[in-house]
Each structure stands twice: as C-alpha cells, then as structure tokens.
Image (cartoon, helix red, strand yellow):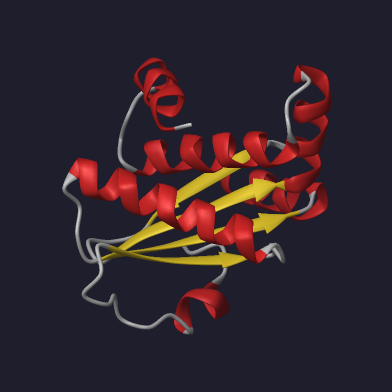
Length: 141
C-alpha cells in the first residue's frame, strides 16, 4: 500500500534521464538542485537508468503517522523509505524536525544532515545494509 496514493498518481512516466527526482516540501531551489545532482551522480555510478524517485520533506507529525501505520511504531523517526516497482524506485520521507534536531546535536549544518538522511533512505531503496551505506554516504557527501 502506498503511503500517498494521491501523490504517486500525479507522477509522469520516467524521462530518458537517468533518474527523475521529485522533491516535495522543500522551498530552497539551490538545495533541490544539489540533491538532484547528488542522486543523479549515485544513479550513474550504480548504473541505474530510467527510474523515478519522490523525496518528501515533512514534519514530525506526518512521519509519526507513517511510522505508526506502516511499522507500528508510535513515534517520529528521521527517515522512512518505501520501495515501489521497476520504473518507480520509491519514496523517501524525511522529517525536517528530526534533521534539525540531529544537526544541532552533531553540530553540523541542517542541509548536510538533510542530505545525509536522504542518502540513507536512497541506499535503503537500493538494498544496501546499514554498515554498507555509511561508507557510501561519506563517499558521496
């Protein structure tokens, strides 16, 4: 079951690009471009073509609802990733509240933490384990 049926119905078919990245809930155009370029770089390296990916930046309240509904955990989390099918890679939900909290705790920039969480979700969609993805995230950030 898709977390957001309305959103996925509005998607277009993948273009001839390596990946079509849709980012929702993020107003910073420069950051959107950086994230899209980063994901395209990863897809090129991984030799993945003709995929579509949604990234949804949301708040703790929304991600808590998803976490409770799909994982039976009644608390907000930082990132959730949902696989779909061969053409539509999936959706990555990132809590901006958790990203900001973690950025403050770790004394890093919010944008850096946000990218980290997006990559964490992406590598889950690509079936990497946690211990594999840490070195990959460091490599790309």
